[in-house]
Image 1 (cartoon, one colour):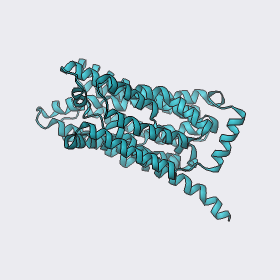
Image 2 (cartoon, rainbow, N blue to C red):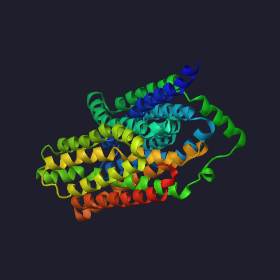
Image 3 (cartoon, rainbow, N blue to C red):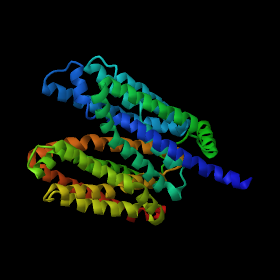
Image 4 (spheres, rainbow, N blue to C red):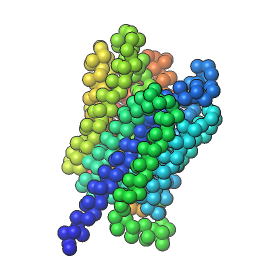
Length: 409
């Protein structure tokens, strides 16, 4: 009897990790599938002229991230109050509906409105991060978050490839409708197989009775705020180079021929490095300390990013991007795991929702800043600036570890 009772929670969090990883992979495909086909779809909706097409494409792309950033703390707080499984069910069903509706848009205005709706109703990957961080035993948290991060990154790789393939073979509308159906399967999997532990149910009941929780219960506010700022800074730095990769590859090769294929390969190598290293670095962080691995990852990433500014050829640049992906695999899991360790149960969803919002801010601002800097000073300057930012993140991580070593990391 005792053995069965003890093993049940262990089976539950492992099963939940599998469900969350599969669902996050699927919903991220839905979020990123639109990337290569968005300008084509905007043109199909009646927008003409290069300037107008690019403008509407940018607005439609950013719309989802805007509402997602605004809604993340709200959904996290509701998850603290009423349970995290209902939030994931809502997010997967909402994304399935929104993605299908995108395929039915009649003009660019409807497209933007539906993209805003998708960001508001979605948030499966961020909700999964909150659930996994809350339920996984502390000694396995970074490993579990590393597995989840790898699944999310894999979705980022597969999404654009799948979107371009389906759109070319069957049409843009079919690409969105089929993705909506795929996300609906994630909804069914979440509904049928995800299970919150009895301890979490009792905690939710206590929270509903007492109506407490939120930011006021966070005991180490300065540490958490520092980590949230670090999270935004690191997302800003790691995403900022993406818009100028194609231009940089063309500069390295000296030719526009096959530049799209070469740039796609470089993108994939970076993502592959992160996918491969995430679980391993998470497991290492659980053994030696989350902030220690974060510091080592940032130190390596800073050096590699600086070297990319002086890479003499495409092969060297591609190898450095792959190595950078490996280094970055240890960043997100360790930051989230460190924040989680500083939070009471009643504030997990809210604060990790703030973390999601901080990451979205960096994700939107990074490419914009990189585009401006690259246009003014050249693509090499972007890598130098990014290395400086990760270096600043390294200094911040060292300071956080020294100041809050008493928290147990």
